[in-house]
Structures are given as structure tokens and as C-alpha cells.
Length: 135
Ligand code: FES
Image (cartoon, rainbow, N blue to C red; front, top):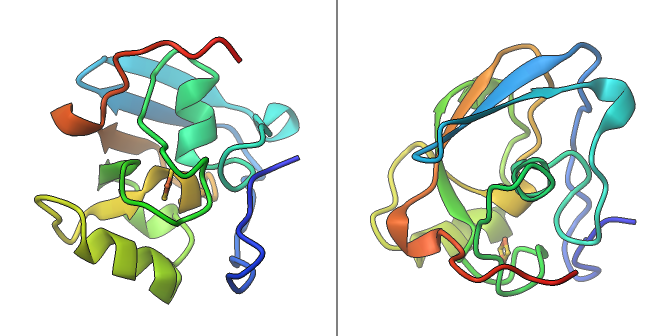
């Protein structure tokens, strides 16, 4: 079960068909994402950067629970951006409210790489979740 906002249009995502590498900075955590073992939690789109990060010990803030209703999961996709789904207008609206947004900005909960490239993701200091959740 994944977190999707019922008030948003359905995101057009293409799940990966081959393994790819996701590298999270500044944690310097590299994860091999395997199509047959995509994380699927209640927070964010299935296979999203948020789910990949959170299931591999990289905590990213996600105040709205991963339904594109905040900008606390704002990250920079430094490599592999073209392999990610197109953002919905609602995501772009949230990014407009995020501090220090750039053309590499995405919401981690709404961004699903298709696996055709490795991705490198930088988590801004203000969005690193310092508190471990117990669920
Ligand atoms: S967690 Fe709120 S938009 Fe991603």
C-alpha cells in the first residue's frame, strides 16, 4: 500500500525493469534498487525516492505522509533526473514553496526513477529527519 493523495490526478510512473543505483548525499548511502523488490510503504508513490531512502536508513522529512501536500521531502536529483516521472502541477506548486528550489528540485515522495539511469539525490540539511520514527 502506498500513500497517494486521492485529490490529485494519478501520477504517471514507470517502474524500473532493471536494477539501478540510488546514491543519497550527504549520507553517502548507495542502494541497489531491484525491480522485484521495490519498497512499497504507506508513504509516497510506490518505488519513490522517499520509500527507497526510508527503507534504507536515510531519513527524509515527510510531514504530510507522502501525498504531495507539503514540501518537507524536497530533495535535489543531481543525476538521473530524466529517468524520473514528470512532476504533476501539484508537485511543482509545492516546490515553489520550498526553500532554495532549483531545476533539480523534486519531492522525494512523488519521484519514481524508471531505472534507466543511476540517480544521485542530495537531501538539504533542513529536510534531514533527525528523529527516528518507530513505525
Ligand atoms: S512528504 Fe509531503 S510532499 Fe512529500
